[in-house]
Image (cartoon, rainbow, N blue to C red; front, side, top):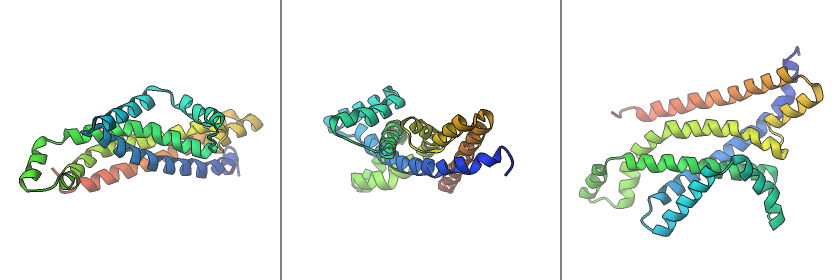
Length: 215
């Protein structure tokens, strides 16, 4: 295989780890987005305060420091996580905090008349939320949540700093041993694009599908 593609098989070893990390942390982030987003709208004050504290803490502190704290500090408290577990936890919680604001703001953007109409139809609160509010709000969430998913994919590169054998870690090790800096990181850049662009197309496809029949 001719240069620079001769280094591709080595870099591909880290792609699987990057995809696994992205998928699992995205699932956690999605769950936290809705859980905390609903918490921000809760009538029970302690839940609302807890949701605000979570959101402001993870949005107001460095992702790198959060990762280092979980991976290097928690073991001092007898809480030991693998590099993969630490990466999933922090990426999920970090982007879940941003996603929760998307969920909260999208739900609040639905006119109150929609809720009143559901009440007139003698629908319960959970029915109004599930059948009227969420279908409209979710369509509004898709572009922002899709952007955060792509940002999450790119942010997985940070786990190479705790020696998780992902794409960025493979690239760094390859560069250190071959000194082919331009070729190595050029290929890493291309691979991240090849992973991110299909996500962009998928988000657009989902948005078009869900928009069919809606004004």
